[in-house]
Length: 255
Length: 197
Image (tube, rainbow over all chains, first blue to last red; front, side, top):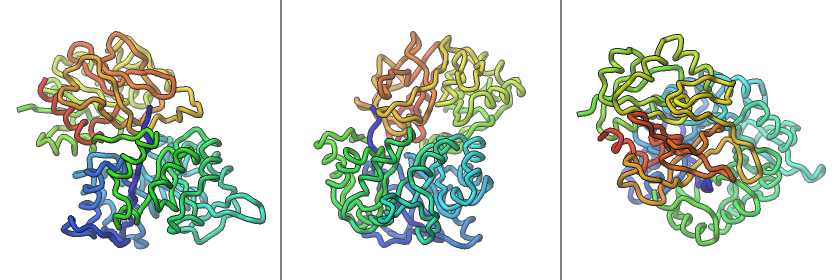
Protein backbone atom coordinates (compact mmCIF):
# COMPACT_ATOMS: atom_id res chain seq x y z
CA UNK A 1 0.00 0.00 0.00
CA UNK A 2 1.29 3.43 -0.92
CA UNK A 3 2.36 5.46 2.13
CA UNK A 4 0.86 8.80 3.17
CA UNK A 5 3.40 11.52 2.44
CA UNK A 6 4.80 14.33 4.60
CA UNK A 7 5.97 17.28 2.50
CA UNK A 8 7.88 20.28 3.93
CA UNK A 9 7.45 23.40 1.83
CA UNK A 10 10.23 25.96 1.37
CA UNK A 11 9.46 29.48 0.17
CA UNK A 12 12.35 30.87 -1.84
CA UNK A 13 13.09 34.32 -3.22
CA UNK A 14 16.10 34.98 -5.42
CA UNK A 15 17.43 31.54 -4.57
CA UNK A 16 17.23 31.93 -0.77
CA UNK A 17 14.78 30.56 1.80
CA UNK A 18 12.44 33.37 2.78
CA UNK A 19 10.34 32.37 5.75
CA UNK A 20 12.31 32.24 8.93
CA UNK A 21 13.96 28.99 9.82
CA UNK A 22 15.25 27.93 13.17
CA UNK A 23 17.83 25.20 12.80
CA UNK A 24 20.87 25.21 15.01
CA UNK A 25 22.59 22.48 13.04
CA UNK A 26 22.60 24.33 9.73
CA UNK A 27 25.54 26.44 8.73
CA UNK A 28 23.29 28.70 6.70
CA UNK A 29 19.56 28.62 7.37
CA UNK A 30 18.90 30.73 4.29
CA UNK A 31 20.26 28.14 1.86
CA UNK A 32 17.31 26.10 0.55
CA UNK A 33 19.58 23.25 -0.55
CA UNK A 34 21.05 22.76 2.91
CA UNK A 35 17.61 22.86 4.53
CA UNK A 36 16.21 20.50 1.90
CA UNK A 37 19.02 18.01 2.49
CA UNK A 38 18.30 18.05 6.22
CA UNK A 39 14.59 17.37 5.63
CA UNK A 40 15.40 14.54 3.22
CA UNK A 41 17.74 13.07 5.84
CA UNK A 42 14.99 13.32 8.48
CA UNK A 43 12.59 11.29 6.35
CA UNK A 44 10.54 13.89 4.45
CA UNK A 45 8.83 12.02 1.60
CA UNK A 46 8.99 14.85 -0.89
CA UNK A 47 9.86 18.53 -0.94
CA UNK A 48 8.09 21.53 -2.43
CA UNK A 49 9.86 24.75 -3.37
CA UNK A 50 7.64 27.74 -3.88
CA UNK A 51 9.34 30.58 -5.70
CA UNK A 52 8.00 33.96 -4.73
CA UNK A 53 10.41 35.92 -6.90
CA UNK A 54 8.48 38.41 -8.96
CA UNK A 55 11.14 39.42 -11.47
CA UNK A 56 12.22 37.88 -14.76
CA UNK A 57 15.88 37.85 -13.63
CA UNK A 58 14.75 35.77 -10.66
CA UNK A 59 13.64 32.96 -12.98
CA UNK A 60 17.24 32.31 -14.02
CA UNK A 61 18.23 32.15 -10.36
CA UNK A 62 15.45 29.63 -9.80
CA UNK A 63 16.67 27.33 -12.57
CA UNK A 64 20.19 27.46 -11.14
CA UNK A 65 18.79 26.63 -7.70
CA UNK A 66 16.80 23.68 -9.09
CA UNK A 67 20.01 22.28 -10.61
CA UNK A 68 21.75 22.50 -7.22
CA UNK A 69 18.80 20.82 -5.51
CA UNK A 70 18.77 17.99 -8.06
CA UNK A 71 22.49 17.42 -7.53
CA UNK A 72 22.07 16.86 -3.80
CA UNK A 73 18.51 15.69 -3.04
CA UNK A 74 17.69 12.00 -3.50
CA UNK A 75 13.90 12.28 -3.05
CA UNK A 76 11.31 13.83 -5.39
CA UNK A 77 10.72 17.56 -5.38
CA UNK A 78 8.16 19.94 -6.86
CA UNK A 79 8.78 23.51 -7.95
CA UNK A 80 6.02 26.11 -8.16
CA UNK A 81 5.44 29.82 -8.35
CA UNK A 82 5.08 32.12 -11.34
CA UNK A 83 5.08 29.37 -13.99
CA UNK A 84 3.51 30.78 -17.15
CA UNK A 85 4.12 28.49 -20.11
CA UNK A 86 5.63 25.35 -21.63
CA UNK A 87 9.09 26.92 -21.80
CA UNK A 88 9.10 27.68 -18.04
CA UNK A 89 8.13 24.09 -17.27
CA UNK A 90 10.61 22.60 -19.74
CA UNK A 91 13.46 24.59 -18.16
CA UNK A 92 12.57 23.48 -14.61
CA UNK A 93 12.16 19.80 -15.53
CA UNK A 94 15.35 19.86 -17.58
CA UNK A 95 17.15 21.32 -14.54
CA UNK A 96 16.00 18.29 -12.53
CA UNK A 97 12.63 19.12 -10.95
CA UNK A 98 10.36 16.06 -10.73
CA UNK A 99 7.10 17.97 -10.79
CA UNK A 100 5.92 21.53 -11.30
CA UNK A 101 2.96 23.20 -9.68
CA UNK A 102 0.76 25.68 -11.52
CA UNK A 103 -1.95 27.74 -9.89
CA UNK A 104 -3.07 31.21 -11.12
CA UNK A 105 -2.02 30.55 -14.71
CA UNK A 106 -4.07 27.35 -14.84
CA UNK A 107 -7.20 29.29 -13.86
CA UNK A 108 -6.45 32.04 -16.35
CA UNK A 109 -5.65 29.60 -19.14
CA UNK A 110 -7.03 26.12 -18.34
CA UNK A 111 -5.84 24.79 -21.71
CA UNK A 112 -2.29 25.09 -20.31
CA UNK A 113 -2.93 22.01 -18.16
CA UNK A 114 -3.80 19.96 -21.27
CA UNK A 115 -0.74 21.25 -23.10
CA UNK A 116 1.65 20.54 -20.22
CA UNK A 117 0.20 17.07 -19.53
CA UNK A 118 0.55 16.15 -23.19
CA UNK A 119 4.08 17.54 -23.47
CA UNK A 120 5.55 16.29 -20.17
CA UNK A 121 3.06 13.72 -18.80
CA UNK A 122 0.41 14.06 -16.08
CA UNK A 123 2.76 12.67 -13.44
CA UNK A 124 4.70 15.93 -13.24
CA UNK A 125 1.79 18.39 -13.36
CA UNK A 126 0.49 19.48 -9.96
CA UNK A 127 -2.48 21.84 -9.95
CA UNK A 128 -2.37 24.19 -6.97
CA UNK A 129 -5.82 25.27 -5.78
CA UNK A 130 -6.18 27.97 -3.10
CA UNK A 131 -9.64 28.12 -1.54
CA UNK A 132 -11.75 30.06 0.96
CA UNK A 133 -15.12 29.15 2.44
CA UNK A 134 -18.03 31.16 1.06
CA UNK A 135 -20.48 31.29 3.97
CA UNK A 136 -23.41 32.69 1.96
CA UNK A 137 -23.22 29.86 -0.59
CA UNK A 138 -21.84 27.23 1.81
CA UNK A 139 -19.14 26.26 -0.67
CA UNK A 140 -15.45 26.82 -1.27
CA UNK A 141 -14.27 29.40 -3.79
CA UNK A 142 -11.00 29.30 -5.73
CA UNK A 143 -8.63 32.24 -5.26
CA UNK A 144 -5.60 33.18 -7.38
CA UNK A 145 -2.64 35.56 -7.17
CA UNK A 146 -1.41 34.18 -3.86
CA UNK A 147 -4.92 34.13 -2.39
CA UNK A 148 -5.66 37.77 -3.21
CA UNK A 149 -8.11 37.45 -6.10
CA UNK A 150 -11.43 35.59 -5.96
CA UNK A 151 -12.39 33.80 -9.17
CA UNK A 152 -16.01 32.78 -8.59
CA UNK A 153 -14.99 29.17 -9.35
CA UNK A 154 -16.21 26.37 -7.10
CA UNK A 155 -13.27 24.38 -5.72
CA UNK A 156 -14.73 20.93 -6.44
CA UNK A 157 -15.76 21.83 -9.98
CA UNK A 158 -12.31 23.25 -10.66
CA UNK A 159 -10.55 20.21 -9.17
CA UNK A 160 -12.58 17.93 -11.45
CA UNK A 161 -11.79 20.07 -14.46
CA UNK A 162 -8.07 20.10 -13.62
CA UNK A 163 -8.15 16.30 -13.39
CA UNK A 164 -9.98 15.89 -16.70
CA UNK A 165 -7.47 18.20 -18.39
CA UNK A 166 -4.57 16.03 -17.23
CA UNK A 167 -3.32 17.26 -13.84
CA UNK A 168 -1.64 14.39 -11.99
CA UNK A 169 -2.11 15.72 -8.47
CA UNK A 170 -3.90 18.51 -6.61
CA UNK A 171 -2.29 20.73 -3.97
CA UNK A 172 -5.26 22.05 -2.02
CA UNK A 173 -4.62 25.01 0.29
CA UNK A 174 -7.27 26.51 2.53
CA UNK A 175 -6.50 30.22 2.89
CA UNK A 176 -8.85 30.25 5.89
CA UNK A 177 -6.69 27.71 7.69
CA UNK A 178 -3.23 28.68 6.43
CA UNK A 179 -1.03 29.96 9.27
CA UNK A 180 -3.71 29.37 11.92
CA UNK A 181 -2.18 26.10 13.19
CA UNK A 182 -5.66 24.95 14.20
CA UNK A 183 -5.83 21.97 11.86
CA UNK A 184 -6.32 21.33 8.16
CA UNK A 185 -9.59 22.05 6.32
CA UNK A 186 -10.96 18.54 6.68
CA UNK A 187 -14.33 18.96 5.02
CA UNK A 188 -13.15 20.41 1.69
CA UNK A 189 -10.17 18.05 1.63
CA UNK A 190 -12.53 15.07 1.97
CA UNK A 191 -14.93 16.42 -0.66
CA UNK A 192 -12.08 17.03 -3.06
CA UNK A 193 -10.50 13.64 -2.38
CA UNK A 194 -13.81 11.89 -3.05
CA UNK A 195 -14.53 13.93 -6.18
CA UNK A 196 -11.33 13.13 -8.10
CA UNK A 197 -9.25 10.00 -8.55
CA UNK A 198 -5.84 11.73 -8.51
CA UNK A 199 -3.88 12.24 -5.26
CA UNK A 200 -4.65 15.24 -3.01
CA UNK A 201 -1.97 17.11 -1.07
CA UNK A 202 -3.60 19.01 1.80
CA UNK A 203 -1.99 22.29 2.87
CA UNK A 204 -2.73 24.98 5.42
CA UNK A 205 -3.42 24.70 9.12
CA UNK A 206 -1.17 21.90 10.35
CA UNK A 207 -0.07 22.91 13.85
CA UNK A 208 -0.06 19.75 15.95
CA UNK A 209 0.76 16.14 15.20
CA UNK A 210 -2.89 15.18 15.75
CA UNK A 211 -3.87 17.44 12.85
CA UNK A 212 -1.96 15.15 10.51
CA UNK A 213 -3.91 12.10 11.71
CA UNK A 214 -7.14 14.00 11.03
CA UNK A 215 -6.18 15.12 7.54
CA UNK A 216 -5.27 11.57 6.52
CA UNK A 217 -8.13 9.75 8.25
CA UNK A 218 -11.00 12.23 8.04
CA UNK A 219 -9.77 14.40 5.18
CA UNK A 220 -8.75 11.45 3.02
CA UNK A 221 -5.60 13.31 1.93
CA UNK A 222 -2.78 11.40 0.24
CA UNK A 223 -0.12 13.83 1.44
CA UNK A 224 0.14 16.72 3.90
CA UNK A 225 2.25 19.81 3.31
CA UNK A 226 3.45 22.30 5.91
CA UNK A 227 6.12 24.97 6.23
CA UNK A 228 6.79 26.93 9.40
CA UNK A 229 6.00 24.15 11.88
CA UNK A 230 8.92 22.25 10.37
CA UNK A 231 11.17 25.30 9.92
CA UNK A 232 10.70 26.34 13.55
CA UNK A 233 10.97 22.75 14.74
CA UNK A 234 7.58 22.86 16.40
CA UNK A 235 7.11 19.44 14.86
CA UNK A 236 10.02 17.10 14.28
CA UNK A 237 9.55 14.99 11.13
CA UNK A 238 10.89 11.66 12.51
CA UNK A 239 8.78 12.08 15.65
CA UNK A 240 5.70 12.94 13.55
CA UNK A 241 6.13 9.85 11.40
CA UNK A 242 6.48 7.51 14.38
CA UNK A 243 3.42 9.15 15.95
CA UNK A 244 1.38 8.66 12.77
CA UNK A 245 2.40 5.04 12.46
CA UNK A 246 1.33 4.40 16.06
CA UNK A 247 -2.06 5.81 15.14
CA UNK A 248 -2.54 3.45 12.24
CA UNK A 249 -1.43 5.71 9.38
CA UNK A 250 0.58 3.87 6.73
CA UNK A 251 3.84 5.79 6.61
CA UNK A 252 7.41 5.27 5.38
CA UNK A 253 9.65 4.98 8.42
CA UNK A 254 13.14 3.82 7.59
CA UNK A 255 14.74 5.91 4.88
CA UNK B 1 35.59 0.78 -13.19
CA UNK B 2 32.16 0.74 -14.77
CA UNK B 3 31.66 2.71 -17.97
CA UNK B 4 27.98 3.49 -17.83
CA UNK B 5 25.89 4.58 -20.80
CA UNK B 6 22.47 6.17 -20.33
CA UNK B 7 20.22 5.81 -23.38
CA UNK B 8 19.46 9.20 -24.91
CA UNK B 9 15.91 9.47 -26.21
CA UNK B 10 12.83 11.64 -25.92
CA UNK B 11 11.93 10.76 -22.34
CA UNK B 12 12.35 12.83 -19.21
CA UNK B 13 14.27 12.53 -15.94
CA UNK B 14 17.64 11.69 -17.49
CA UNK B 15 19.26 14.41 -15.39
CA UNK B 16 17.89 12.86 -12.19
CA UNK B 17 19.55 9.56 -13.10
CA UNK B 18 22.83 11.30 -13.91
CA UNK B 19 22.72 13.15 -10.56
CA UNK B 20 22.11 9.87 -8.70
CA UNK B 21 25.04 8.24 -10.50
CA UNK B 22 27.23 11.28 -9.80
CA UNK B 23 26.44 10.92 -6.07
CA UNK B 24 27.86 7.39 -6.39
CA UNK B 25 30.95 8.80 -8.06
CA UNK B 26 29.96 7.43 -11.49
CA UNK B 27 30.29 9.66 -14.53
CA UNK B 28 27.87 8.26 -17.11
CA UNK B 29 27.66 9.04 -20.80
CA UNK B 30 24.28 9.97 -22.31
CA UNK B 31 24.25 8.61 -25.84
CA UNK B 32 22.18 7.22 -28.70
CA UNK B 33 25.28 6.04 -30.58
CA UNK B 34 24.95 2.25 -31.11
CA UNK B 35 28.72 1.72 -30.89
CA UNK B 36 29.00 3.55 -27.55
CA UNK B 37 25.98 1.67 -26.20
CA UNK B 38 27.53 -1.67 -27.21
CA UNK B 39 30.91 -0.77 -25.66
CA UNK B 40 29.55 0.35 -22.27
CA UNK B 41 29.94 -1.96 -19.27
CA UNK B 42 26.40 -1.13 -18.08
CA UNK B 43 23.46 0.48 -19.84
CA UNK B 44 20.68 2.39 -18.08
CA UNK B 45 17.38 3.04 -19.87
CA UNK B 46 15.49 5.67 -17.84
CA UNK B 47 12.24 7.26 -18.72
CA UNK B 48 9.25 9.30 -17.76
CA UNK B 49 6.81 9.98 -20.54
CA UNK B 50 4.42 8.36 -22.96
CA UNK B 51 4.96 4.91 -24.47
CA UNK B 52 3.98 5.39 -28.13
CA UNK B 53 6.01 8.56 -28.73
CA UNK B 54 9.01 6.98 -26.98
CA UNK B 55 8.78 3.80 -29.13
CA UNK B 56 8.34 5.85 -32.30
CA UNK B 57 11.50 7.77 -31.48
CA UNK B 58 13.48 4.59 -30.69
CA UNK B 59 12.29 3.03 -33.95
CA UNK B 60 13.20 6.09 -36.04
CA UNK B 61 16.72 6.04 -34.58
CA UNK B 62 16.94 2.22 -34.98
CA UNK B 63 17.66 2.11 -31.27
CA UNK B 64 15.00 -0.59 -30.77
CA UNK B 65 17.17 -3.15 -32.60
CA UNK B 66 20.29 -2.00 -30.77
CA UNK B 67 18.78 -2.20 -27.27
CA UNK B 68 17.40 -5.75 -27.62
CA UNK B 69 20.77 -6.97 -28.92
CA UNK B 70 22.81 -5.66 -25.96
CA UNK B 71 24.68 -8.25 -23.89
CA UNK B 72 25.90 -6.27 -20.86
CA UNK B 73 23.84 -5.60 -17.68
CA UNK B 74 20.91 -3.41 -18.73
CA UNK B 75 18.54 -1.58 -16.36
CA UNK B 76 15.22 -0.10 -17.48
CA UNK B 77 13.60 2.40 -15.09
CA UNK B 78 9.85 3.14 -14.96
CA UNK B 79 8.75 3.78 -18.56
CA UNK B 80 12.07 2.21 -19.59
CA UNK B 81 11.04 -1.06 -17.94
CA UNK B 82 7.56 -0.89 -19.49
CA UNK B 83 9.08 -0.37 -22.95
CA UNK B 84 11.01 -3.63 -22.46
CA UNK B 85 7.68 -5.53 -22.34
CA UNK B 86 5.67 -6.90 -25.27
CA UNK B 87 2.73 -4.54 -25.65
CA UNK B 88 1.49 -1.51 -23.72
CA UNK B 89 -2.14 -0.51 -23.29
CA UNK B 90 -0.85 3.06 -23.36
CA UNK B 91 -1.83 4.09 -26.93
CA UNK B 92 -1.75 0.33 -27.83
CA UNK B 93 1.96 0.43 -28.33
CA UNK B 94 4.10 -2.44 -29.52
CA UNK B 95 7.19 -2.41 -27.29
CA UNK B 96 10.66 -3.99 -27.40
CA UNK B 97 9.48 -7.48 -26.44
CA UNK B 98 12.39 -8.36 -24.13
CA UNK B 99 9.87 -9.53 -21.50
CA UNK B 100 6.90 -11.52 -22.90
CA UNK B 101 4.49 -9.59 -20.70
CA UNK B 102 1.96 -6.84 -21.52
CA UNK B 103 1.64 -3.46 -19.76
CA UNK B 104 -1.83 -2.75 -18.35
CA UNK B 105 -3.61 0.39 -17.11
CA UNK B 106 -4.60 0.60 -13.43
CA UNK B 107 -8.33 0.87 -12.80
CA UNK B 108 -9.02 3.78 -10.42
CA UNK B 109 -10.90 3.19 -7.19
CA UNK B 110 -11.36 5.18 -3.99
CA UNK B 111 -8.65 3.11 -2.33
CA UNK B 112 -6.23 3.25 -5.24
CA UNK B 113 -5.76 6.60 -6.87
CA UNK B 114 -4.20 6.88 -10.31
CA UNK B 115 -1.36 7.65 -10.92
CA UNK B 116 0.10 5.33 -8.27
CA UNK B 117 2.28 8.06 -6.81
CA UNK B 118 4.48 7.99 -3.75
CA UNK B 119 6.48 5.62 -1.57
CA UNK B 120 5.47 1.98 -1.48
CA UNK B 121 7.13 -1.07 0.02
CA UNK B 122 8.18 -3.95 -2.21
CA UNK B 123 8.36 -7.66 -1.50
CA UNK B 124 11.60 -9.03 -2.87
CA UNK B 125 11.57 -12.67 -4.06
CA UNK B 126 15.23 -13.44 -4.54
CA UNK B 127 17.30 -10.86 -6.20
CA UNK B 128 20.85 -9.61 -6.00
CA UNK B 129 19.54 -6.25 -7.21
CA UNK B 130 18.12 -5.75 -3.68
CA UNK B 131 21.23 -6.88 -1.81
CA UNK B 132 21.91 -4.91 1.44
CA UNK B 133 18.57 -3.08 1.18
CA UNK B 134 16.54 -3.22 4.43
CA UNK B 135 13.24 -5.09 4.57
CA UNK B 136 10.69 -3.60 4.17
CA UNK B 137 12.32 -1.54 1.46
CA UNK B 138 10.60 1.63 0.33
CA UNK B 139 10.81 3.01 -3.18
CA UNK B 140 9.26 5.97 -4.98
CA UNK B 141 6.71 5.13 -7.69
CA UNK B 142 4.91 7.31 -10.24
CA UNK B 143 2.95 5.44 -12.89
CA UNK B 144 -0.53 4.82 -14.30
CA UNK B 145 0.29 1.55 -16.10
CA UNK B 146 1.72 -1.61 -14.59
CA UNK B 147 3.32 -4.93 -15.49
CA UNK B 148 1.41 -7.91 -14.04
CA UNK B 149 3.23 -10.61 -12.09
CA UNK B 150 5.07 -13.04 -14.35
CA UNK B 151 7.94 -15.53 -14.38
CA UNK B 152 10.30 -12.56 -14.76
CA UNK B 153 9.02 -10.81 -11.62
CA UNK B 154 11.82 -10.38 -9.07
CA UNK B 155 9.98 -8.06 -6.67
CA UNK B 156 6.32 -7.20 -6.33
CA UNK B 157 4.28 -4.32 -5.00
CA UNK B 158 0.57 -3.75 -4.28
CA UNK B 159 -1.59 -0.77 -5.18
CA UNK B 160 -5.21 -1.08 -4.07
CA UNK B 161 -6.07 -4.68 -4.88
CA UNK B 162 -3.60 -4.95 -7.73
CA UNK B 163 -0.33 -6.80 -7.29
CA UNK B 164 2.20 -5.86 -9.92
CA UNK B 165 5.86 -6.30 -10.86
CA UNK B 166 8.16 -3.85 -9.07
CA UNK B 167 11.23 -5.46 -10.66
CA UNK B 168 11.82 -7.81 -13.57
CA UNK B 169 14.79 -9.84 -14.73
CA UNK B 170 15.51 -11.97 -17.77
CA UNK B 171 19.16 -12.74 -18.53
CA UNK B 172 21.13 -9.49 -18.63
CA UNK B 173 17.94 -7.39 -18.74
CA UNK B 174 16.73 -5.85 -15.47
CA UNK B 175 13.86 -3.49 -14.98
CA UNK B 176 12.40 -1.56 -12.06
CA UNK B 177 9.01 0.16 -12.01
CA UNK B 178 10.05 2.61 -9.27
CA UNK B 179 12.63 5.38 -9.45
CA UNK B 180 15.84 4.30 -7.67
CA UNK B 181 17.32 7.73 -8.49
CA UNK B 182 14.63 9.30 -6.27
CA UNK B 183 14.38 6.60 -3.59
CA UNK B 184 16.91 7.83 -1.04
CA UNK B 185 19.59 5.46 0.29
CA UNK B 186 17.68 2.30 -0.80
CA UNK B 187 17.62 3.54 -4.37
CA UNK B 188 21.32 4.42 -4.24
CA UNK B 189 22.11 0.91 -2.94
CA UNK B 190 20.10 -0.65 -5.76
CA UNK B 191 22.03 1.33 -8.37
CA UNK B 192 25.29 0.34 -6.63
CA UNK B 193 24.23 -3.32 -6.76
CA UNK B 194 23.42 -3.06 -10.47
CA UNK B 195 26.77 -1.45 -11.24
CA UNK B 196 28.51 -4.38 -9.53
CA UNK B 197 26.92 -6.89 -11.95
